[in-house]
Amino acid sequence: MIVVGVDGSRAGLEAVGWAAREAALRKLPLMVVHAMPAWAHDSGPNDRYAGVAQWMRDGAATVLAAAAERAEQEAPGLAVERRAVPGDARAALLELSKDADLLVMGSHGMGGFRGLLLGSVAFGVTGHAACDVVIIREPSAATPPRGEVVVGVDGTEASQRVLAYAFEHADRHGLELRAVHAWNRLDLDGVLASASEEDDELRLLKEAVAGYRDLHPDVRVLWEVVHDHPAHALKNASEGADLLVVGTHGQGALSGLILGSVSQAMLHYAKCPLAVVRNVPETR
Image 1: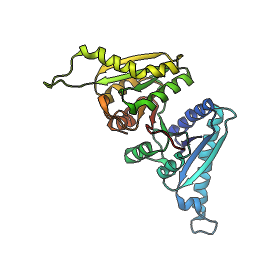
Image 2: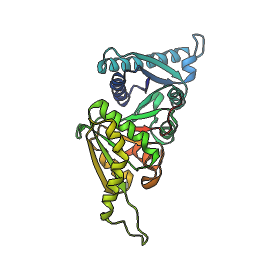
Image 3: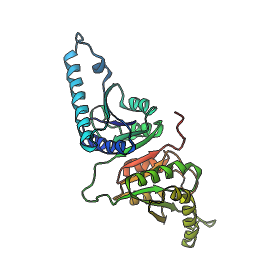
Image 4: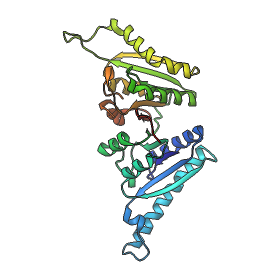
């Protein structure tokens, strides 16, 4: 099941469209979720503010109906469940993520999900969800997608699920994959390591990716080794990409890439949809 949070905003509907297409390709059902105040959700006809509560429930139904309509437009015949949930949007999404294959959210919004992708709330959902998370930004007319998935590679064991997700997505959608390895180590004298080491870094990158190329021979791989901070390198690489893939923690040459500081930075600065992949295999 793919779960997508909606709030009536344009960003939320873009998230529904993305999630519906992904659900159709994966042959999974879609659940569209809208959070509303618990008192309004549970209010009875004799409560003091029953009229206001009914108005809010009607509004939630309208938001969910618009989301279901968008899903039908993107993936006709897709199984779509509508669910209005009481209380905090973050808590609701985290609970639903326990049984989800993927959680999808828009990059900003209002209503029940206002501020969901800003500050601590975004970090809480993205860093603690029990499944992979995708954050959808509104498409840019100035930079149309170029048919490419971008993934940051550091060669550590922690990045294996990140690479697997990136290759599977590229294969499923018929996209190229750009593997980015950024390094800015200093030598013993505090001087930036020589560019002559780039061959070693490229070898590390290709070794990390080799097994996934064998599993996905139809995916064309582009290599990018850059002398730069990982956050800056991935921000630049995400311009015009169809998806940027990072992980929830990291270590090694690209410390923080795989939610470390780099992943947090990408929540704010990625120029394309962002997938944050759990590095711990699901137990369900």
